[in-house]
Length: 167
Picture 1 (cartoon, one colour):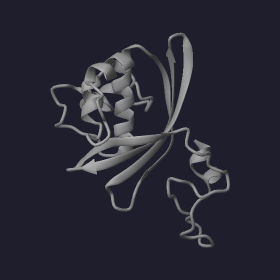
Picture 2: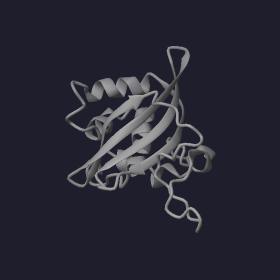
Picture 3: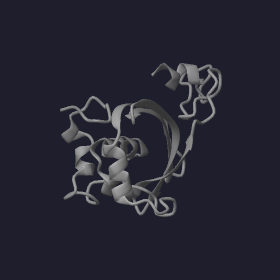
């Protein structure tokens, strides 16, 4: 079975090691992108315990694992699209912009979020997110931070249209 996160990898090689309750806490995602994908899979499978455990305690508020489980199971998850991902230079902060489609109470919802992650004690955690982030212009520098490799433009930022917009 392919993973719910649409990585096109087998579930057991992708998100399952993170979501497995017996391994939880022993195997953790190595990047914000891997955490984002595993959190999507946790919503699909209704794994509220994992969602809560992977949420930064400073921003989870009064959410409960039961509420997260219920939300996940009450939706029909239709797909995850990654827009871009970036790890900051300090190696402790990361960003993943994505779109998720799901059906809830008979209507299709599109969630577009720029999520912020923080590494705490060697473990990536979801901190918070910006819903419907500003649109990136085609000629703006790509938010992933990629740079040109040509001799003429070595070291200058790639334009969004030449980088992540092609995905």
